[in-house]
Amino acid sequence: SKVKDMSAEVADSNPYSRLMALQRMGIVENYERIQEFSVAIVGIGGVGSVAAEMLTRCGIGRLLLYDYDTVELANMNRLFFRPDQVGMTKTDAAVQTLSDINPDVALESYSLNITTVKGFEIFTESLRAKGSQKSGRSTGIDLVLSCVDNYEARMVVNQACNELGQTWMESGVSEDAVSGHIQLLVPGETACFACAPPLVVASGVDERTLKREGVCAASLPTTMGVVAGLLVQNALKYLLKFGQVSPYLGYNSLKDYFPTMEMRPNPQCSNLACFERQKEYIQTKPARDAAAKAK
Ligand code: ATP
Image (cartoon, rainbow, N blue to C red; front, side):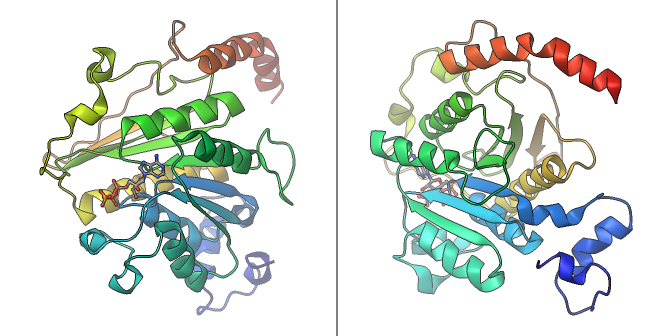
């Protein structure tokens, strides 16, 4: 297979030789496993497209890409898309570029809105589909990365992942483009996205009414690139089991401040699927403790 072929005698021109060096240097135990993993990326904008490119260059096995939008000239202040791709769906344009960079990655393009009934159905079905991938998981996916830019879409990713018991990572960049965050969400084990709703949501304000007519959000390729890097770094640590996976990592570019924190699930969470996963997590605790002791 693509990574294995060059693990013994590595030519300097081989793009995987530098990745395999991680293994020789003792950072990663088994880098070749990267090709067994499937990652779904929701939102192929400023953060998602860059995250997809990073995973592609790392030799990920399979990438599922979801977005409802098309490439516009206004996207050119961000990384990844090119002017000749204007008018293409973001997911198709991404597949075009990513398959050129690394033809070994299995790419799937889903141009749809995950918040519609039909979109949600296709989204969850595609996450469930196991294909030819290895078994031992509840879904066909190892990790979902949320790179959308609105609360409604995040809540839908949260819903799907809670229903499927699927681990995911959330990311976001502030409207003023100078800060961002990433967060790990493990259904039942950590807070879900509905466990601690943002203040504006808790007070019942409709997100759509917050959008001011004619005022567009700022965006910087730098902040988005940093957040994509933090997100994929955390994803690689989670998948390849090295270092410490961050439960939450913030980035404030004005002060170069990186806050971290951990959030337990809310036993009164309004999301029924989260509530179910919390119950399961508590019920399976003795078995987990015994397994940890045996190690
Ligand atoms: P725009 O130029 O439209 O603001 P963007 O590239 O700046 O887009 P980002 O914040 O960089 O937006 O990325 C968010 C991405 O998530 C966008 O590409 C957007 O189309 C996508 N997205 C948001 N909501 C949904 C949804 N419900 N279903 C699918 N994709 C979504």
